[in-house]
Image 1 (cartoon, rainbow, N blue to C red):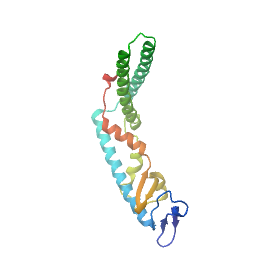
Image 2 (cartoon, helix red, strand yellow; image 1 turned 60 degrees about the horizontal axis):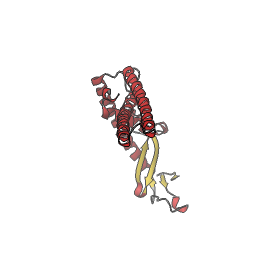
Image 3 (tube, rainbow, N blue to C red; image 1 turned 30 degrees about the vertical axis):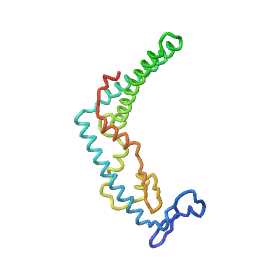
Image 4 (cartoon, rainbow, N blue to C red; image 1 turned 180 degrees about the vertical axis):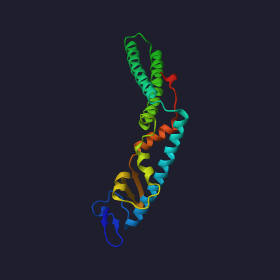
Length: 204
């Protein structure tokens, strides 16, 4: 997109002059329209950050995060995965040397894989919780830390754009896809909120 300044600045796509492989929006994309779209989207993300933070804090109060306990549980699960990997190798060796029949081997192998999968899912949940919880059990998440400050934003600045915006993709008919920063942090927070705390005793 090329930028043209003036009383009413606008962007225009010159890609068709170079190649016809990629579709390009026709006509001018006014800077004011782009500014309003980003501003509206930012406010929406900001309210989402505030709501997500509130839900997480309520969840924390209900279950009282034990960071030390979660780390111990995670370490225990990592040991369990290592033991399962070792057991899987032993099963294969027994099968290879004829000490275990094919049907029995496949059943045992499937049981080991299923158990490891359950542990891996729980480990992913724990890692998300630990990344969201600070040493004092409070929420530490770059998405909420950044976006929650902009619920009442009226004007975009270069610093704000650098903080929250990764890129804007403009499709034909001027359809905008705004890619925000800290989406990995948001995904971890959503996973943490959705999964809930479990003791994992049936997995190890």
